[in-house]
Image 1: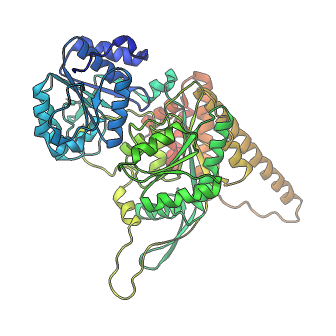
Image 2: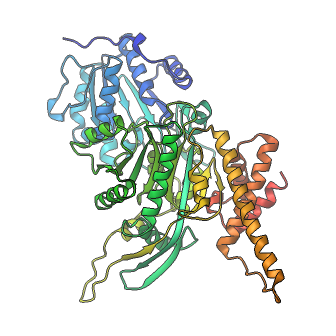
Image 3: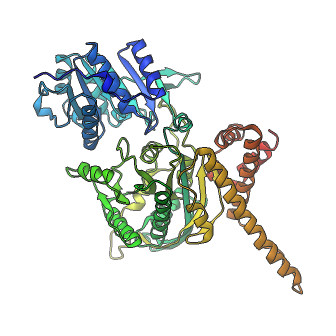
Length: 577
C-alpha cells in the first residue's frame, strides 16, 4: 500500500521565522535552499512542513533525510511520523529501495559516503526532496562531500539545514552557495537566517549563563618536572592544555567542586518551577565519563545515566532520560547537535573539544525553551578560548573559503597530546600526572559581558550566583547579575575599609601590597562592566552590542580574555561614547 499524502492541517502552528522562511522557499521554487537557524528554533518542523507541501502538490514523490548520527535518524523518523510522513530509519545500503508504504528514508552522511551510487539510483527512481540536516557535516571529509554531491545531484529539490554554518577548513559544503566578498574571499550564503539573538528576543530559546571556574592546578610532566598554574591566567597553549587536563581529572578536587555547584544550580531551577530540569556532563572519553558518573552519585546520592557512544542502545538510553525526571546524564561528545532533550537546563563542559563548531553544537543542547522565563546554566573551565566562545554566543559565522588559516583560538591538538600518555623509551619511563586542582568561581558570562569577582567554591559569594532565580527574562538576568556584582563589590569595599581602619590604628602603617596582574584584570573588568551598564541604562542598547562595538573600535578578544592594555583602552573609549 502506498504511503498516504500528509495532511497539512495536522501540522503544529509555525513560528514567525518558519512561516517567513516557508513563504520565501515557496516563492523561489529553486532547486537548493539553505536555512540557518539556531539550535532549538525548530528546523525539523520547518523542513517537514516543506516536505509536506511538496508531497501534497506533487512536486516530489519521495523524501530522503540525511542526518549526522544514528540517533538522529530515529529522531527524524519519529518527528516525521507525528505529522503523517513515514520515513524508514532502518534503511540499509543493501536494501537498495524503501518499502512502498514509506515516503522515503533517513540515512547518515557516513552511509551515503560508503555507497553514493545506491542513493543516486534511489534519487533518480522517484522525484525526490533531499533534506540535508546539519549540512556542514558534508564537508567533514572529501569522501562524504563527494558522496553527497554524487548521490543527490539528480534530486528535484535539496533543502540544507544547519545551526552552525561555519567550518575552520577549506572543504566546500555541497549545494551551499558561496559569494565573493570585497576582500576576494568566498563566503557561504544562506537563504534564510534565524540567529540566537533573534530567537532570544522572540522567547524561542533560553538565556544562557556561563559560570567559569578557575583554580590552582599542579601536575607532573612526562619529563618528571612538577608545574603549577592558575587556570585562566595568560600562559602558553601547552601549559593551558596541561592545566586544563589537570582540572578535568576526576581524582582532583576541581571536578567534584564544580559538580556540587552545578547540582546546586540544578536544584534551584527545579525548585523555581522547572521541576524536571536535567543536567548534562560532556566528557572527553569513556573512562572519565564513568568516573564523572561516580562523582555525581557521590554528590547527589542518585545514579546518573551514562551514554558512552553512538551504539545500538544509546538512542534508547537518551530517550529514556529525556522522558524521565532523572537529574544527570553523562555523555562522551555524543549528545551534541540535533539531540532533543528539552528539559536539559544545566551543563558541565568537561571536554577537551574546543572548536567553535563543537562548542556551539554542545551549548545548543541547553537553549530550547519550553515556557517563558526558563534559563540555562553552563559550567566550564576558565580557559581563555572557551571564555571567548561563551562571550560570542550571538555571533553569526559563515563558512569562508581561501582565508589564511590562523590558530582557531586554541589548538585542539595540543590538548589531545596532553590527554595522551606519552610512551617514553628507556628505563625511566615517566608520564603526565595530575597532582591537585582546586576550583573557584571566576566570573559569570552573559550577553557578552563578564560579571562577578573570584569566589571560592562553597562560599556565600558563590551561592549568590548559584541561587539566581530560575525563571527570568534576559533583561532580568542582566539586572540581577549587575546587582549581584554591585553587592559583591560593596562587601569587598567594606572589608577593605575595615582593614584600613585597623591599619590606621596601628603604630606604623605598612604600604598597600601592589596588585597582581590577575587582580588588575579583575578590577578593570569590573570597571568596564560598570561603564557598559551605565551606557546600557542611558541608551537601552544591550550589553553585548556595546561590548561588540568596543571590540570593533579597539580590536582584541572579548573582555573575558582581554589583556590589561586592551581593557584600559576600552574603558577610555566607552567614556568618550
